[in-house]
Image 1 (cartoon, rainbow, N blue to C red):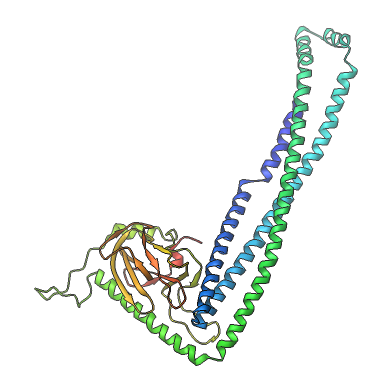
Image 2 (image 1 turned 135 degrees about the horizontal axis):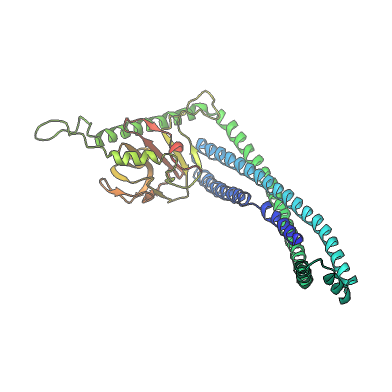
Amino acid sequence: MRLKTALISIAALITVSASPMCAQSLKERQARKSRLEKEIAILDRQIKENASKNASAMSRLSLIENKVATRQELVNESDAEISDIDARISSRQHAIDSLSARLDTMTVYYDRLVMNAYKNRDARVWYMYILASDNLAQGMRRFAYLRNLSSQLNAQAAVIKSSRDEIVAQKAELDSLRNGAQELRSKRVKDLETLKSEEQDVRNLSARLKKEKSKYQKDLAAKKQQSDALEREIRKMIASAKGGDSSRKNSKSGTSKPKAPVDYKLSTEFASNKGKLPWPAKGPLTGRFGKQYHSVYKSLQLPQNNGVSIAVSPDSEVKAVFNGTVVQISVLPGYHQCILIQHGGYFTLYSKMKNVYVKAGDKVKTEQALGTVDTIDGETVFHFEIWDDNTVPQNPESWLRPR
């Protein structure tokens, strides 16, 4: 009986070695890698479109730089996945070795039991064993032992066979893990080669841009004007939504329009979902929140980014990040159609839209489609912002779900 229990406990080591936590970690890494590969495909397509339309070299450089960063992240994920698989291989091999060693010992012990049973197969020996009992209770115990000995030996033999079959299955899975690790290493080598080529593209394009600084300073100045115009428009729309725009007078009394009541419950719900809001569009980030400096002209500060920019596939749909009401839809140079949605004391902006499915006053739900993204100067890049009731721009990455 102890032999059977020991064999079962050893077999459990194999199950523990393939813990759900390891499997979950591997699954999460594969999901991240799949997302990164899709983002690289989006950037590749935009770079080709940018080149075919002879669009801004600055835009092309930004796209390539983002692709390099995404490719590096993909290589890092591959490295981590290979490490995870190597750890699983090592753990699995250790468990198999331990099981094999202990199984060998138990098999020898079991063989001895069978041999002793064979040597003492003469029924007279067993009768004498029973008759030599000190009392009736001991005799009954010896009789029960002899009666069950055969069935116990058969059961233990079945456990040993099952354990051997388990070792064979685990070795097959071990081979599969090793093959998977080898495939990952081969793909990683190719990714590194591609990464080096893309980094060279960045260097070549940067060298070209350095010769045309004055031209791109003008481009940056134009973009800054567009960015400033967008910020002014957002502040104006928020003020209007709050009833604080002094230009909006009551036609009869000449007084300012009363301030609209804030839905504090919705504000609280929005705030409580910080870090959990769904992304309005799927794609790689090409512009992050805050102040950034030019990658080529290090002393040149880029226009302040009050949100995030996301490269997407042409005509991709954009979705609302939370329940709210459409405040206004505006059209601005460089940003095309812009949708402002109010969520109590918070506001979200969806810009560079081509088709818009909603209108001012509409109630929208979380993840409701709002429209599609436009392609501007060879780029299909969606721009998203979050503002609070005090008209302070927020970093969307702090509010949206981790990627």
